[in-house]
Amino acid sequence: MINHLSKRSLLNQLYRIQAWLWPEVCLYCGFSGLDRRAICSGCFSELPFLSKACVCCATPLPEPLLCGRCQNMTWHFDRVHAGFHYQGVIRHSIVRLKYHGDFAQARLLGQLLADRVQDVPRPALLIPIPLHRQRFRQRQFNQSLELARVLSACLEVPVMTGAVKRIRATAQQTHLPAKQRWRNLNNAFCCEQDLQGADVAIVDDVMTTGATANALAAALRAAGAGRVEVWVVARAG
View 1 (cartoon, rainbow, N blue to C red):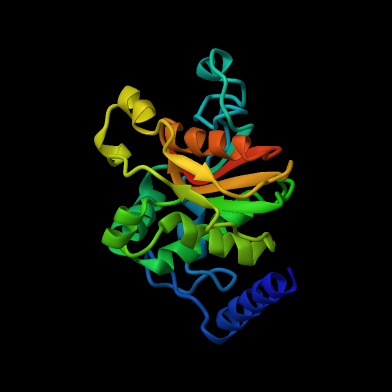
View 2: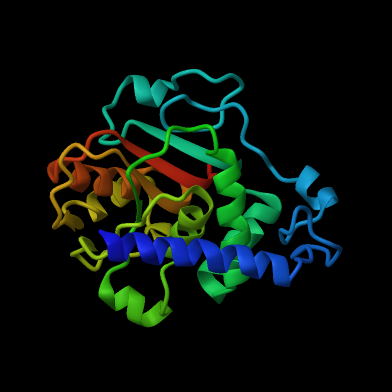
């Protein structure tokens, strides 16, 4: 435990030193960043903030209510917190991170998401959605883990990785219709650590149908997790 806390403290110190030594410029327009972040005040004001959504799954709605889908199904997670609509510059940043390995985008997106969940009760652990080892070898990084690391530094909540695994090499969700996404993820995840009632937050870049987050939440529940939330940068829909 002491070793883990020491590593987390070091990460937080390095994060602060980096922000002080290298003031940011906006990733979108090149002007000076706002509050030492890689986004200017003008671009920040144009971000597609998600302000009205389903109070359970965060599907965009005219008013913050329980959507019809959530009224008729039971999720394995308790609630989704999404910072933005999956559109505009947020979509651009996610694509740059996920498919081009642009880690500057991970830092900015993680900071923006940390701001959006600032008033949400802190979980005990952040759990990025894991990649199967085959997919990891192809991509060489996990965008959900990169986001979780930034969130960890901003919010001082530890990240759990090794104990949560993707045990089936499923087809890419983006290539499948909605119904097949659910079947594709049956028993895809496992958690090898006893969570003993710990409150956790699953971290991901974007949520579409919710199938991936729901499958991982089921594995975390089976491992004894208490409250399970999903924190995503963007919500499609």
